[in-house]
Length: 322
Image 1 (spheres, helix red, strand yellow):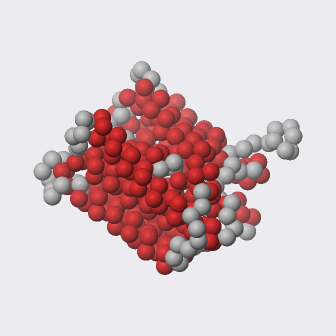
Image 2 (cartoon, helix red, strand yellow; image 1 turned 120 degrees about the vertical axis):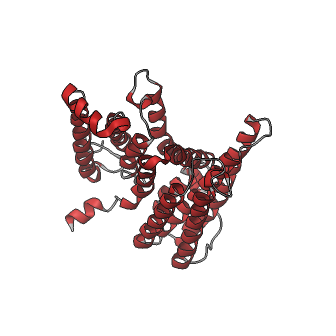
Image 3 (tube, rainbow, N blue to C red; image 1 turned 135 degrees about the horizontal axis):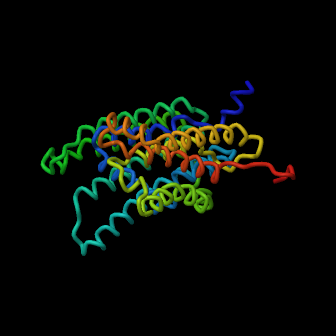
């Protein structure tokens, strides 16, 4: 029971989607997995990170009527966020549009809607159904992206993007059906709690991608030499596992702090071994073109852990009230 209480704030299903994008990147669809992440992330930001902010909003709402009111507020925000990204794309290109970019924006919209119902299912207390929905989404995303092609004429849509677009749409529909079946119809008035949670949710959504971008801009950074986007998703997987509706208390944060410290130390030790010339020679023979992805992944896992602690962790100093 003690161990269960320590783990109650950890949702392993949070890591499934970034882990899926990591696998897709490693299997040769890196550009597409990166595009899915970027346009899902941008749509999320313009939606005030409301699908992420729902977790915090729900933690402050004991009534299911208020919970459903927050869901009703979040759903139109996802549409508004995707439309904002599409309009910016059109404005930047003088009214011309890229079909592929609009498809990725549509995929981002569907995945953010799926995220809303994923959080809603957790709010109903049915974590099993929420995890099942996220597993379905991850499996569909994996299959859809791997079915894309390398040619612009690979399918009905450019690069066969009908497959991941259909997968994302199916994920949103399945999660909505399961969410409404388990949680019931969305009754209650729309409430603005999720908008009040937007500043923190936006900060949580921004910190890791901005850190990745900053690292990639450093001259001679390992992130500039990578063959795939796998390091981005390796760190994101670690970061997403730290998520909580609010900053943990020092006591709740203690097990997470130990885990993050161990992961960081192991990553940095492995990164140090990578600098040994004989180890580098051996790894080059094994990894070939993926050689530079390894140190970048180790560095970003450590960075993801640091972001997780910064956003969700807490330590106690001299005063018990700190």
